[in-house]
Image 1 (tube, rainbow, N blue to C red):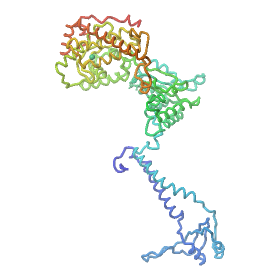
Image 2 (image 1 turned 90 degrees about the vertical axis):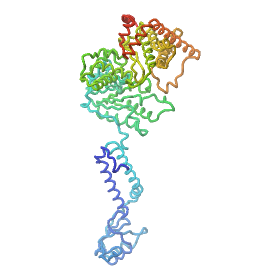
Image 3 (image 1 turned 135 degrees about the horizontal axis):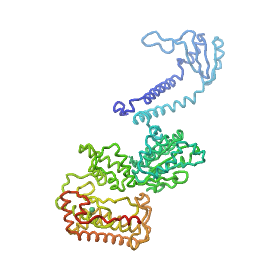
Image 4 (image 1 turned 120 degrees about the vertical axis):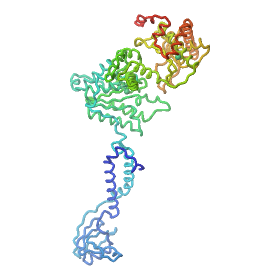
Amino acid sequence: MADFKGRKTPGQQAAGPGGFWRIVLIILAAWLAMNLLTGGRNEPLIDYTMFLNQVERGNVESVTLEGREVTGVFKEPVQIGDAPANGAKPAKNERFTTHVPDFGDDDLLSTLREQGVSVKTLPARDRGWFWYLVISFLPLLLIGGLIYMQYRRMQGGGGGGMFNIGKSKARRAEPEKQKTTFDDVAGAKGPKKELEEIINFLKDPSAVRKLGGEVPRGMLLVGPPGTGKTLLARAVAGEAGVPFYHISGSDFMEMFVGVGASRVRDLFKEAKKNAPSIVFIDELDSIGRRRGAGLGGGHDEREQTLNQLLSELDGFEPNEDVIVMSATNRPDILDPALLRPGRFDRRVSVPMPSVDEREEILDIYVRNKPLADDVDLRRLASSTPGFSGADLENILNEAALLAARAEREEIANKDIENARDKVMMGLQRHGLTMTEEEKRIVAFHEAGHAMTAALLPRADPLHKVSVIPRAQSMGVTQQFPERDRYIYRKEYMLDRLAVMMGGRASEMLVFGTATSGAGNDLQQAFKLARRMVLSWGMSEKFAHMAMGGPEGQVFLGEEIASRREYSDQTATEVDLEVKSLLDEAYQRARECIEDHREELDKIVEELLDQEEIPGKRVLDILGVEKQPPKEAERQDA
Ligand code: ADP
Ligand code: MG
Ligand code: ZN
């Protein structure tokens, strides 16, 4: 109520429905009140005695008997009620109404006949229940109306409102509005091929049916975040030219219990009405999480929603041409019921882009960006392993912003380099005052990483070393693989561990003490070493045992529920194996650095001077020709 005369939301300016209903309500209330007071009659009520008097005087022309109610017309108008106090001429009435007593009046009819009054009789109007209803519900109705209007106002007038929360929030995109096509999706050849079938079906369902083709109803796009799952789903709708209903799993979770379920119902109803069409449920894991797995018991609302979804998936008639697509990056936590045949039984995996695909994605996003000649997208693509399409898009955006800030006409290579570093490692920290001593520690630390990376045969090629402080670190040593790898050898892992230890080893060698700067390296090395022992059987003692669970983050509820599957004694041995891997890595790093002590000082000197030096320069200083080729080895890996 507070905002009655205050803030006006845009939707309220149209005031249409809200204002209209308010007026209707008020009129209705007034009418009801009038009826209640007058008993539904407009004629003035007179005493029964007065009525009998008038009849006996012969002043009544006609009466209508309706149950106990009597209405009638006087011959001469009669003044009813007291004369007005101010002595004005009192109004006279021609018509009247009165009531016959409950026990009846046996003489009434004969009296009326004697006086020649014309009598009309009607069956009694049984208004008892009606008035009862009106009287008991009027207040409720009024209060309800007020609450309703209040809600509308809170919701900003227009479409939404308390009575609409159950309605689907799905945005309906008309076919002509869905302009995304497969051309907008770079790479993703596999997924595109699998989705082709669906597009053909949606374009002409009957043609496929005639051939006896059965089309999968539910498609689940699975892949890491940012790999273009949502984009692909849109593109399918765009290619097929059918209505596209898009809703995100989290949209279901709102306000009141039961709303999610009714949204699902609504969404499917709409889609069926406009078939052939696509329903796309993004982030399926937020409703489709395995039931009963959460902490502290189930989540009722979510389960209701999920159950509704399951029953909708089952409830299609064979000829209803609705394709249900959904996407998730956590297929492992989905409720198994969702994946049963007839539901989301078809999986399309959308992987991280390969180098070539990254280049294609970059090509798409530089279309509208002017690039300087020194920009090499191939190089950018190969230096961004593990980057998703979304990350790449982000890099190019950042680069454009940096170029604009520097008031350049074109995006230069350094903008792209900086953007990549920013996306990878966070913003540079300016105005950070470090003492000379601290700077030296950082420089030796990074130089240690760089040297081990340059010297160890299987380490990824060194890209650059930098001691520019950034959001997450004081310095960085970047290595980029020449190509994406899917399988790693144990030797590669060992070299990688040694490179991680390089920072600490260099500090120890030069300053003779440990610093906190290596904390992050040590954590990562520990994680990697544990994985080597537990998941990959890369230790001597447990060469053929994988004791670790599935990789990747584990769903919270599960993590707690799942137990270690080996004995305490084994756990101790695992710890020892991990420790020996780490010790060995440290030793190797230390030897690398000790053997090139002079070069270390030289690298540090240049680092402190220039803040950032390319990997090639480190190789020069070390007098290493080039990292040994690893192609042969990789091929059989
Ligand atoms: P997901 O749903 O898999 O998390 P999105 O489809 O939302 O990822 O994609 C995130 C962003 O990355 C979008 O802006 C999209 O344009 C871009 N993107 C991701 N993969 C590709 C690709 N293969 N081609 C073009 N753009 C992509
Ligand atoms: Mg998405
Ligand atoms: Zn480090």
